[in-house]
Length: 241
Image: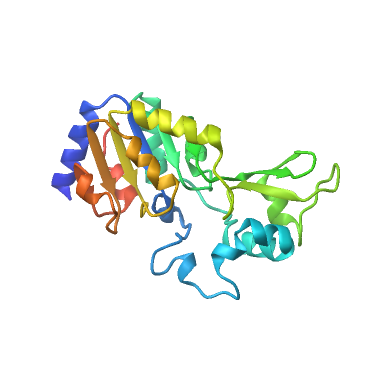
């Protein structure tokens, strides 16, 4: 691993416009379970598949079941940014890292201090009434029982996360693509690169260095200039911003 860290450090030193593209593996070191590993959410047994419970259809047809599942499996409290989040915030502060493109919805990058974060799948920190658009924080959803209703108009308060069957926000996509196109280095970490359309954004990268930090193989391994099979936080913690 020492040689790999040395190579990564050299690439970072030579780069001036880095984009970080991250997935669930970035947050597992903070205690948030991932989805697709052997112990992940999709490997657990439920009455209905997680893909249905977190779908637009379930939200519309059976909102109580949706919110019961959402509170238990998605809204995890008492978590803090890990070494990966903190190092990325430091890299941004020092002008090396220009943007984070994340598939995560936990908001840990912002808690660590990162400013330019494009959340492809939304955030649990934002919730809006479907009728009047009134804003509610995560605590309102977590502490409510059954279906959370708006105090202003009585409409259902929906998490600002992209559910199955819903499209990604076009402005967020445009911003993420623009950042990737302009970057001279992209660090892809903690993602299987199997969730589309998010994973397809990698194809816009035309810069010099493509680095992959992931414990399991991905479809982009052969295209990478460097592949590191270790935990994201343990790797980035050894980097000098």
